[in-house]
Length: 340
Image 1 (cartoon, rainbow, N blue to C red):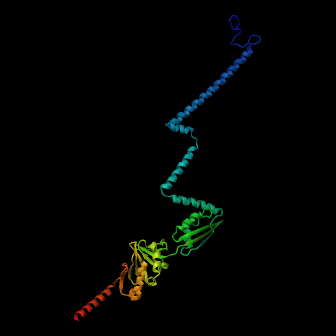
Image 2 (tube, rainbow, N blue to C red):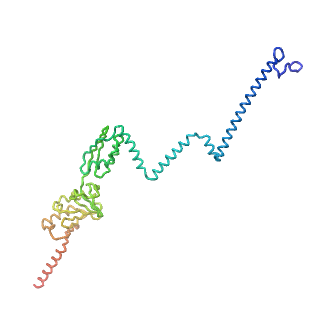
């Protein structure tokens, strides 16, 4: 401003050296302004078109699915996530079906077969099997007990698990499993020996000395084993039969040892004679029995039972025929005494 308070020059027009605006420069400035306005208009129009398209897409999505939450998910969730979720749901449903249907073992077996097939393909097929220590079991029975079949591979065979499976067989007391790569398998087993036949509730089985049932049936080769009868007899038979073995006269005639009330034993001899033993001091009772037999041929007499349960006496029961004969003899003796 000048000293009189007026503007020294115009604020609207640019100042040139000549103090006057040339026409050509004015035209250039106008063109620039027009171009800037045109560019701004284009940008504005593009922005408006973009907003319109976004609004149209929202309206279209809302029309297809009125649920805003689902529409939001459809707009913002990655496209492949749907396929992934579908696979997860189908897989989960299949797993649930396997569990609910009780097909877990079948599924695991299928997976095992698949991996074993791959291992066999690359050279880990079991081509040689050696089983040592078997007597009662066949090689096929040993392999079946260990879970080894024609599809098994040496690579995925678990020696520790196989050993546990073998020991779960009642005939096998102990086992060792060796994997000899690439395809040899060696199995060493220790078998239990058949000790006696055990009868309970009319069922007959072969047992080992520790009472374990080896076979729930009796093959012909086991027919000569001693017979024990009654609940609890299978675990007490070893000690009792060892005691009876000290008295050969009794053992040679023994047909069965019967465990009564899980407390005491009775002996059934081959001729049907029953010997009732006490609960305690069984050895003394058997020694007395042998003495009576040596002195009086007791085990050869026509009697059906001998009762040794009382320590100070021996009681016998005559057979029916012997009882009748004894009664007739008594009557004759009485008549003779009366006549006299």
